[in-house]
Length: 237
Image: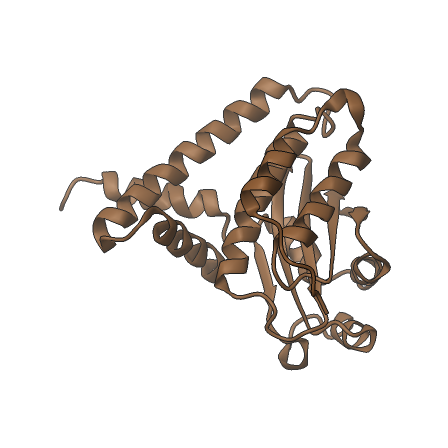
């Protein structure tokens, strides 16, 4: 059971921003992502990062054997929340494995290992590589909506840190990754503004609403934001 006082998210994000490529490699970057996720998001017992290239998955970083073993069990079975999250760059929330009907081969193994709930958030890395940040807990219902929103925000910072490492494709440049990240952020900010105007809510509440739409529709946060912005730009019929 996770009993460590969570870090302030602002501190964790600053730590990700301070990663120096001259001092580490891909493994080091991903390990810091997993470690900070475990320490920042309440309820996490162990965390890992899955990378998926050409349908071949591997665990690039993990904070403990439980996370690594659960990832690898999903790879062996060819299905599971971390693989689905990585493939679709979406959120896969499993509140209680005893009530879970998906992944019939993986779930019994996870329960036997003591896992009761999990949260996997897709990491958009590059067109040929995708990933997922995986959070495991030995308690049911460990991750509420606030945890989902924080995990998605954390994954956004982690994706930028990963993009900065130039490690996904020989032809991918930092400028391309940063441009894409800026464009995605701009669309998400526009969508938040639309929600704030319609619902008369705060920016945090708007982001939480947008994240919930993403989770419920099993679509990328950026895709949901883009659709919302396009809808708002249509002239009234």
